[in-house]
Every structure is written in C-alpha cells, then in structure tokens.
Length: 451
Image 1 (cartoon, rainbow, N blue to C red):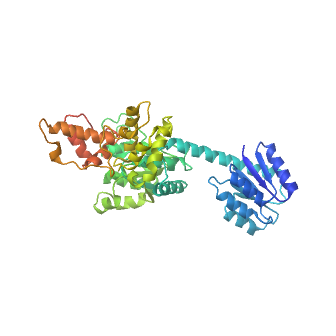
Image 2 (tube, rainbow, N blue to C red):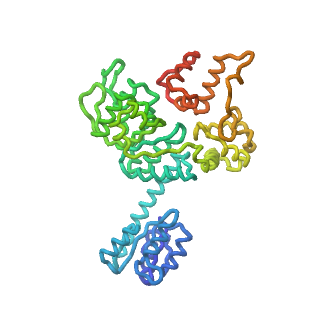
Image 3 (cartoon, rainbow, N blue to C red):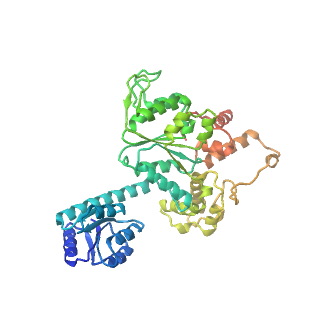
C-alpha cells in the first residue's frame, strides 16, 4: 500500500486518521505541525500527504509547496474546518489533489487515500514501462531535457506530433515515450517506415485493401490505420511520402476516416498520429514536394530532437546506460575511452554510438574498454569527428574503384546501423542513388527492404 504522512495540530484527530489508514495497510507517519511535516518530507518516500490547512507557524499551503518541490511529489489532500469555497479553490489551484472539510467520516478519508494510492501505483507502473521500452532516452543535456519535457506534455493530448531531427537521434524512442505516457498506452502502437515502401505498397499498407482491389490482392487486408485503432500510428520518415498519399492522409487527419483500396465504404478509427522526419519540411513545402495543407494539419505540435554532437552531456551517461543493459558495470568504460567518446562528432548519432560500443565490447573481451577499442575498425575518432581525405590519398598501385566504392558503401551502412536513409546521408547522396550504386556493383537489394 501507500506511504502516508498525516499532518494535524489537533493531536486526537491526527491519531484517529492515522489509525484508520493503518487499518487499510498503509504505512503512516504522523506529525503534529507544519515544521515536523517539512522535516519528514525532506526524507522523502511519501505517496500521499494529508495536511490540515490552518496551523500555526507553518500552514498547510507551505507543506503543499514543500511537497511539490520534491523530485517525485506526493499527492496532497488538504483538511480544513473552514469549508468555504474560497479555501478549497485556493488549495486546488496551488496543486492539492483533493480536499476534505471537517468534520468528515473516516471511511471518506480511507476512500480518498485509497484512490490516490491506486492512481500513483498505476503512474509508477507506467513510468517503469516507459523506461523499459525507451532505454535510449538519456537526458542530462538541457536540449534533450526540453525535448523529453515537451513529449510528456503533449502526450496528455490527442494532438498530432511531428518529431524533427537527423537519422539515429532517437525519434522512434520519443514516439514510444509519447504513446506509453498517454491515455492510449493500453492501445496498440503501430510503426510504419514510410521510406522502406514504394508508393504502390505504402498506400495499401496504410489504408488496407479489399479482395481483388489489385493484382495479387487475394484476400482482404485491414491495414495499419485499422490496426492502430484506439492507439497511435507512428509514421517514420513522413517526408518521403508522395503527394498522392499525402492527400489521403490529409483526409484522415481532417475527418478521422479513410477508404480502403477497392472499397467505397469509409471507415472511422480513433488513431493518434505521430510522425518523424529528418527532412526540412518547410523547405519541402516551399519547393512543392510536400503539401502545405497536409503540413499544417500534421504539424500541430513539433519537437526537435537534437543531434548527439549538440548534447555532449548525454554521451557518457548514454554509454554507461548501454553497458548497464548488458549487465556490465559503468567502470568497464575507462576514463580515457569516455574522454574519446565525448570528443567525437557522432555523425551517425545514437545509432553510431551503440554500434561503436558493441564493437568495443568485442575487442575489449574481459578487460576494460580502453581508448584504443573505441573506433577500431571504423573512422578515426579525432576531435571534431572527421578527418579530411583527398582523392589522391587513396590512389596507388592496385587500386580498384569498384572494390573501394563497395567498401565505402558498406562502411556507411555499418556506421548507420543498417539504416539506408542514414547511410545515404553520410555519403551525401540520396537513398535511391544508394540503391542504384549497390545494384550497379552486383549487390542484390530491393526498394522494399526495410532498414
């Protein structure tokens, strides 16, 4: 049950309240004034505080203020014999979870505390679930704290959200945070990588289709929008969606209904949309590649996810968290290795950091991860993140252009964790050109391959 603090300068009443709550199995601490409450609150660990409003020296509002200043604030119930509407409203505006007017029945106290304890237990369980499902969301830097704060703030609403940021920054993790922190947490979270599917397949995957809608449609398929009913649809790389599909998504955002391929019957669903992109959508609108009406309908609330190079304070804590998930102590990462990681530019962002650490664990074996283990097999981890290479540096006897290009392409894919969009960005080319170059080198690759 809950840890409860009872604060009342009326000793007899405070004792009766404490005994009633102990009958329900709550662990109760009782104090006879506001000063004692401040001392107990400083020790922490309380789930619910019941405090009298009018007390000498330190009153209930001061106790409420101290409770709210804690890292994990307890729920505060205000007790008052002065049952005017003004007192109740003032307490609730100041942040009290509830209030009780004296005299009150002990069963009423027990009921209020039980409800608050159950609510707090549910919130704690939800927070643990979010931490388990979003392990990479480390935020020690001001910019990442701001992004996480915005995500938690918008999670309480049903507003559409656009996550902006480079590939590998953790946009999908932030989308999960929004879903599992929302009232839709018990519903489905359906993730769709828009860049991994050509337009002809993407439309059918999103909206579903009827049997016989097109060649090969041998059975009816519900689609991702229907699958996300009651939950959240996460559209990754929304900037890659064609204008034709944008029109259909716009209709869904406006009407909350869609028509499956091969059908004339509209279907309504309750779906919240979270989208992500590494593109500049404003520039895409200006260039005519992204519909302006779709942009404004989609971009109700935007969150910018900073690249890792702009959140240096997160690099070492993120590396330690990665080791912790592997069951390894933070001490396995040497101070020299930490310094080297912190000084790198991370063009591949969080994804590159994880790949680098995976490789370092292999190289270090049973020993600590030393500076030489970080970046081995990859580009030099020089301060600033890159080293200029001239074409003349690689030319020499026995040089083979195809072999060099193949090695370069696969180095980019490895660096990007297999994400072809991110690999193409590292190479300074488009995703389609990456596919084209791989195919020209005899590699078997199709545009429907996921990243």
